[in-house]
Length: 134
Image (cartoon, rainbow, N blue to C red; front, side, top):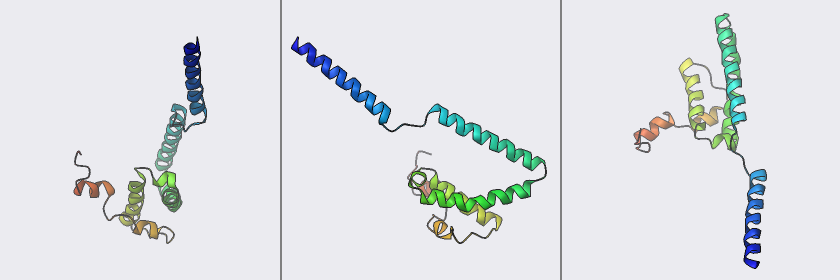
């Protein structure tokens, strides 16, 4: 009888621990969050396509371009964003955008761009043999 009570106590303790961790523990991205992000992205792409087809491409480009410094500062300054595997790549592409289109880099993000590698991070790592499986 005593062994049975001990086993039941351990079982209930384990179930309670699992419940507490499940309720209060960190959560991965859920399907609902992914779905909403995807739907928002789809809506944005449809809007962009409509603006381009309507002949508003220049205004759209200027509007998006005005948002780039804020995005760069957010990615570089926020630990959750900056620790993402894609963060350096996105920052590199933002810098490349300014170079490719001859747009003056805003002074507020120049220090961020100066810390980036000259080449795309994947190309650098490929050249150094880090991603030799590619």
